[in-house]
Image (cartoon, rainbow, N blue to C red; front, top):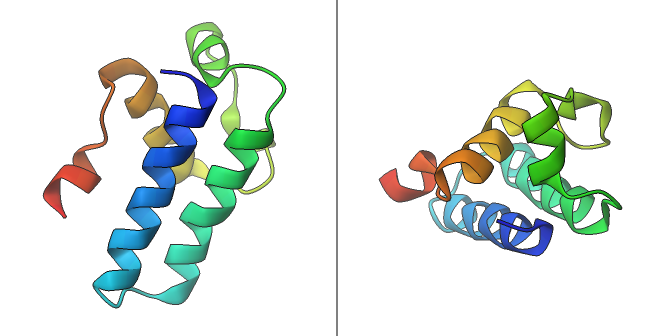
Length: 83
C-alpha cells in the first residue's frame, strides 16, 4: 500500500467519523495524519518494514502510527470496517 492509498483510507475514516458526529478533534487527527502521509517523502511501507518510529512525523501519534502499521501490514483498517 503506497502513501496515497494510506492517506485515502485515513481521509475516509475522518469522513465516516464526521458523519457519525464524532469529536471534531478526532476527525481532525485523521485529516492531519492523511496530510502528513501524503506529504511524506519516504514510503510508509518502508518505514514500517524497518520498524521506524512513526510518531516522529507531525500529526502521527501512537494510535495513528498503529493505524498506519495496520494498513501497511493488512491492507485494511479494522476500525474503518467496523464503521
